[in-house]
Image (cartoon, rainbow, N blue to C red):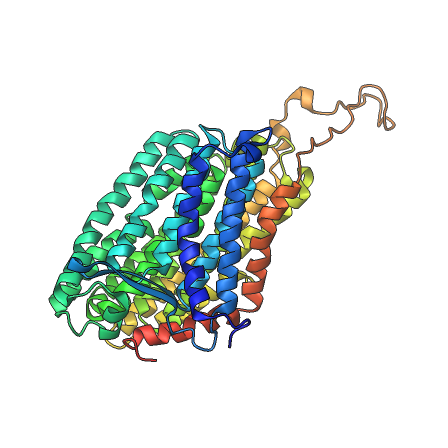
Length: 555
């Protein structure tokens, strides 16, 4: 079933346009604007250009989704297959199925919302031209990662996003941005070098880099030892990007230093590239190697779930001087642990849960970073003790709509039933209860129990954050200075307003949600509710594709 019947050639063009248009837009952003388009403010003109290009890409992606045959989501659609480097049998092979289409939509939506937000609230830094060009190159690389079906092209697209994100952190970030940017690039580049070796090993041993052909072969053309080495090498590179504990240490620093839109794109889009690689490459191409490493992957995943939650609890406690952006970054380590656990089960239930959790994390954590960025802009800090201090800082009293939306995003993040965060975690735990044949059930049920305990820890730190930031904290009466206490009358109670009695201080108001903020944040909140109430929309796309993937390319 297609909502609108679109010809195959138009679908091919739309997918190619989605991948290439941001790259062309980045080049155009760096060129001098035509005289008629300069306007009175060239900086605003180039930011408007970014909104226009990302908006056009989002519209094309939506049309692509509308023309997608939802009755056959396991079939590669809108495919383009052109020889590029015949000597290596490298082809420009593009296509989408039920696994990649939701990630394309998420990437196009988040990038457009970031461009729209930046039009009104550009982070402090160098030329807006460079900023817009970097965001567009980042979008092109991410979209290409989810659309290409050739291993070498996947690697090139996977690497294409590193340089733009490095400069977004290093040039438009906050404190310690240089160190955070270097840590990000070194970790990911080292992981990528090892990943390239694994990709070359698969290509040379199988005779092709075509991901569809390799998935259909389902590892039959690769020996068990080659699969094990390939999974170890490629999995290491993907695990750094995911990020998996203990390869996660670059993430909190990168998020803390990055500008708001950088954090949104890093959490909402870039982390998904790693988990997508596990599903698209390792599960179907090297199943025996994955089965060997699945118990270890699951073990690292559940350690990440608990570790991320404990780190968040430590940051959230009073007096810890915890940074709210850093706390949300550590929460991502825990949430991506659920995604890795689902993949490690090697079952349709677990992998569907992982893909659902991927999308939910992109929506919810993207919204959280938008909100934390707005709070930091208003207060000048993201320090939790300052935000929760006894200075009338409670968001409910100072900016009620902003406080309510932060509470909503936090509750969605902890996995409340009826919101998007619930389904991915639940399906992942169900998958761990009954893992694939050949995997230890007692081990995976232990991992399930640890993961379930992690959900309790997640609820604990998120509710602490809501209580402290939204409701505020007040110092005990004994800690108030004499000047802060209302003087008592010597001869009994005095009437209201009597001399010597200080009137109650009014809480200073903050700017509540602005129109442009509402425009950027409302789609994420609405989709979080929609995915929570109607999960079949997403699972109906992913499940047939996952079933085919795990069955070795057979529907």
